[in-house]
Amino acid sequence: MFRFLKMSKLKTLTLMLLLVAVFATTAVNAKAAGHYGYGKAASVEEIAGWDIDIRPDGRGLPVGSGSVEDGEILYEDQCASCHGSFGEGVGRYPVLAGGEGTLTEERPEKTVGSFWAHTSTLFDYIRRAMPFPQPASLSDDETYAITAYVLYLNDLVEDDFVLSLDTWEEVAKLPNNSNFVPDPRPDTQAVRCMKDCKKEVKIVSEPTMTAEEVAAADDTILKAAAGNEKGASVYNGACAVCHNSGVAGAPTLDDKATWKARLALGEATLIKHAIEGFQGDTGMMPPKGGRMDLSDEDVAVAVKFMLAEAE
View 1 (cartoon, rainbow, N blue to C red):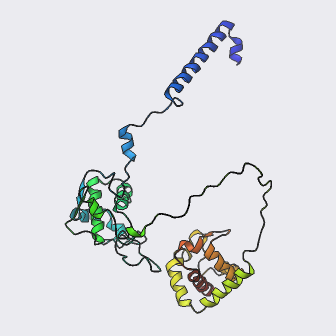
View 2: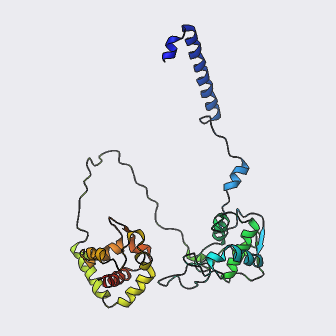
View 3: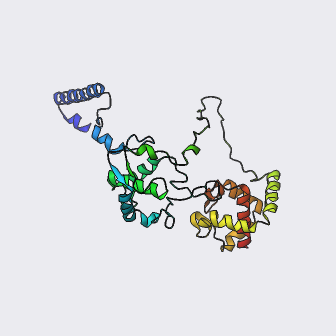
């Protein structure tokens, strides 16, 4: 602005007209292009670089093939260190094979053969994310071969099977496919308040449990009193992963001081927190420890066991 004041009137007028012309040209070009004047349409090649999803019916599969025999060699080299030579899993890495008939058990084994619905999920995940240290480094033929071998580990194909576009339909659906159903719950959407809205929102503190809930929890505790053996089993299967190591602020069983403070809340409240979840000052307890397959009684006997061990 100060520089304008020092210019002659002619120079100032000329500069202003030039700026107006530039802005007008930009606006016309943007309007003609139908956008703000930047960017460009993605090319077919650019779209193909990320559009690599595989549908259950095989649409999206790349050209190629892979045999069980070749897959075994690749699997041992690229996958066995994490998933085990027979798909049994190493440490905390996922188990890939076995588990048939376990889905109704307390601790189901969810593998490709026992739980997954479509082979496309297996192929797509291997192609995008495996092997763990070098994701997306496998060729299309190698992905076909490893997928074929994992199917073989689950007794879904013979040892001479070759997976390709031509044989995909034979293995497209996995054994548990029929147990996957559409979610019947209706879609819901919150509606923004536009009138007669609450003018003030108050945050109040209420008792964590009603008298009826306390009575019900006490009844659950009594029923669980004789279930210490089951409590140990549930604890080892569902709770130990956090409470043995203190993950996410979970108190270990030898942390007497922390458990003493928790005991002051009462067993009924602790069981309610374990079932429904609880956010504390030092950590967070997810509902049922994230194991929603557990019954309320399972959680109660586990809490009972933990309190007995922590005393």
